[in-house]
Image 1 (cartoon, rainbow over the protein chains, first blue to last red):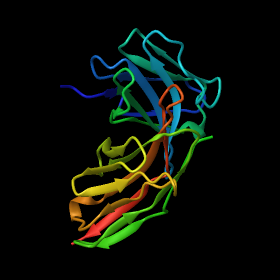
Image 2 (cartoon, chains in turn blue, yellow):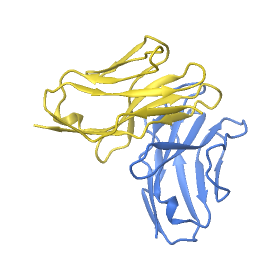
Image 3 (cartoon, rainbow over the protein chains, first blue to last red):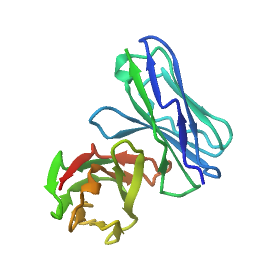
Image 4 (tube, chains in turn cyan, yellow):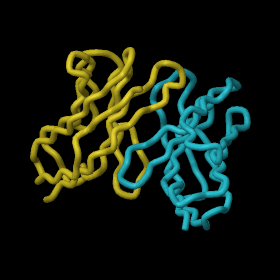
Length: 113
Length: 113
């Protein structure tokens, strides 16, 4: 079946603009994660959604970052007033309820000029 | 908090050489441990995992054993191939709730013919 998809694959924006990144998880996966991968670094956890439970937002680096998820489907990650340090690859992953194997999408490469 | 430390790269080997990539972790409780791989131009893929002490994960000729006494999960392969050239990430799963993954910084492996 289809894997995790993300759009856009690449995004170039100017400092101060808002951006919205989209993730479509694997059908039937109730858990959804966002991570950030800066150049030369490992992945940093941003936010976690599980069904209708309150999301775990403990990894969001500032209040400029927010995310939403519609039921158990699409999620959007919004970065307001982008800064150059926001430049990174943003990865989305999904997994089954209580499962530990997370399946990753191809990522969105964000460049803030 | 939880953390993962893996050996710095890059690592360059000749085909058929033995590979070891060291990984140690710090965690409260008993995490699951993972190795993910990112091939050039591709997304992050699960390579292998182990969920409890002394478990051995294996896949594609790679192996790693969950060593609780040394808090380690070293990745090994007896004979590497050019096609193994990739970035390898060690990770642990936070079982405290979100099961988010905590990643090491990654080790880039290049295998020359």
